[in-house]
Length: 468
Image (cartoon, rainbow, N blue to C red; front, side, top):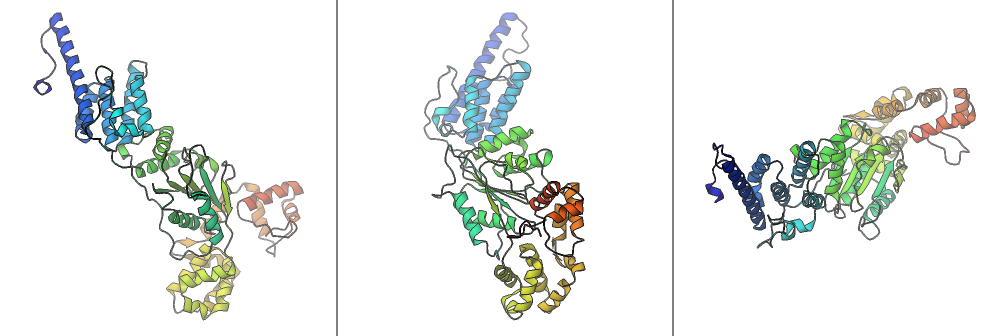
């Protein structure tokens, strides 16, 4: 009967009784279409009917039954985000034109789609029929497409060196004591890695995330957070990127950041995904990217300890010791070359101060110049005036990292750092800051603490308040 229908009923007849009859016929046709959609869904034909349902829903923007069938067809086709977008558009139409919310059945369906309710994959959650009853059992269940597994991590370092204790602490914490990252009711596991620029925070986070692949079988997300604050388009862009990685088509990503957050957490609910947020400046931006339950876990790296995040396990990453520094140089420049010039290798490691980034620059420069002796490079580093310029090779350099840290300082800590360069020593007692700044000891202590917090000064162990 539906196949024989052509256009609006009794078109062109202006008689009131005829028009009333035509309205009844139109209503019966729409009811029949809703019943047909319900039966098609019960038979597992969700993929074939989405196009027609889109057209019907557009033609009947207030018809809840058609929109419910469209939402379920999209969800069973693995298009959860589009199903939610159908509900959001319908709700907007209802609010604008009628000033009301969609019916309870449609609201319940939206909640079920958000929570990936298993009943939606079976017969029990099909839209109600014209009599308001639940759908009949399906002859064969229609399985929705499986969720997308994101794998956004940068490649692991083949010459990752040392960090055994840090790596053990990080992986055991994130995996959980029994190898399960979290359960319902538990807080989200957040591991923070802080330390000075070039110390290898990102390398440790990525290396650990690769090792935890089996613990987080639903994927790994990664975002470079440098320069991202709590507001603006950049953070909203990170959310959009995560949603696309989780399988949301680009044209259905919500516009508002709040809606993106809600959808992001809904997609992560119940899934074991590891999220790596690299080089975060503060806690505010990180909070917006935390999952909503403890099944997923988060690794955050940054110059500063992000102790404002409740429950964070903070790992303060130190420089490499002498042995691991030489080992890293050996793995980059070659074992025979380093073993034959070990005294010079030890001096180069000392110039690098145990910073993996500095060691990588030195190792790469040696590797690309096989005719250079290590002593030749040592002589270049002995020139203090030009030493910082030597730590640069093919995009790797220390100067840019130091510049970024300096520019992030408040005026008074920046002034103290400049004044400290006038001292002819690498270590100094804490009261020196008060003399240089011309202020009281308490005020100077706050300024020194800011430089320590920014990883631009180190406290000297056992130095009685000394700083270096």
